[in-house]
Structure formats: structure tokens, C-alpha cells
Length: 228
Ligand code: PGA
View 1 (tube, rainbow, N blue to C red):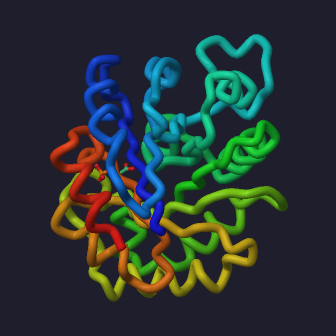
View 2: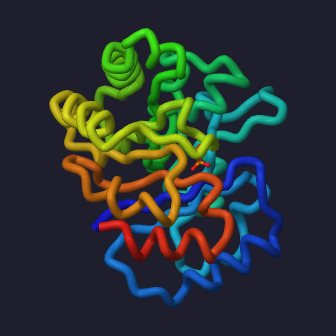
């Protein structure tokens, strides 16, 4: 079983959600499918597919206009939530400290945080991939509770570029060694119908986090079917 997690980012209408979820409804797959939707699409009919959010507040409630808490997500039926996605770190300057607080807030509400980590292009070019990954892992992971780790190099997100199998394997070997809680370890960043099978079958890769290719059934379904 592999985790296949879609991240719709700031995309999608109610009609588009309905079309995708309806077409996934009856598929037979050993893989665990989760779709991380924008807040506006979390409620309503989910056709038996597990739904995740893309962010949450570290606070429980109060005067935080525009924010959504773990408690609110839970009441909307959300089971998973992305925390520390590269878009949040980049556009909203989220730190490892805040990402950890968000992961803890999710766990407190029985929601599994999907903690995203990954180096920038500059960090990769400077040979810092491993040190960045280790630091993010150790500073973002909560002391207790169930969570998932997603390794997503920022430079691979939405670019069509991916690390080589050797580079991915080296990162996952490192993550595996640090992974005392045996959290599922996912790869994300330009996963598509052509590379899903080979990436998901690398050692210690427990699944995939998919952005652009999760928006349409003709690209998402082949990924679900080929991940092994
Ligand atoms: P991508 O995005 O698959 O479009 O590269 C992945 C992500 O940002 O989670």
C-alpha cells in the first residue's frame, strides 16, 4: 500500500471536485488515496475519499481573522492536513517552529499532519540538501502523535524537474535513519504519469504527494494505478 495524496493548492470549484471524486469513487486500488482541498471544498459529499486540508492555525479559536483551526477542520470531517508546504514557507514565511506548532495543533484534534520538508535550488547547488533536510525534520516533527513526512524539493515543485533516483534514494536513506516513529515517508515534486511508478518503488518511499497532476482524473488515476 502506498499513500497517494493530491494537493489541489488554490485550484478547484465545487463542480470540479465532484467530477474528480465521483470518478475515483469506485476504483479498486490497494493504495490509500487522500485529497487535500482548499477550505471552500472541504465540506459536502466526498464520495468515500479521505479529505485533507492544506494548512491550519496553530490556535484553537479566537481573533485570527481568515484562519481555520484544527477543531474547525475536524468538525468538517477532515482527517489529514498539510503543514509547512513549500508554498507556505515561501509566500507566508513559515518557520520550522511554526510548522511544528501547526503539526501539534493538528494532532491535538486527531488530524494527521503531513509535514512537508525540502531544500531550495540554491541550497541544493550549495550541497546543503542533507543538512537542510535533517534540520527541517528534527525541528518540525512533534514529540508525540501520528504524522506523515513529505519530502518535496522546492525546485522540483511545478517545474517538471525531479531529483535523480540516486538523489531521492540518498534523501530517503537519511530520512529512514531519522524516522524513529516510523512515519510514512512520501516524495513530492513534479510527480506525473511517467515517473510515479519508478519513484514510488524506490526504497523507503511510502507514497507520493501530487500537485498539478491530481487536478484531473486522466492524470491522477494512472498515478494511483501505477504507484507500487
Ligand atoms: P507538483 O506539486 O506535483 O505540481 O510539482 C507538488 C506539491 O506542491 O505538493
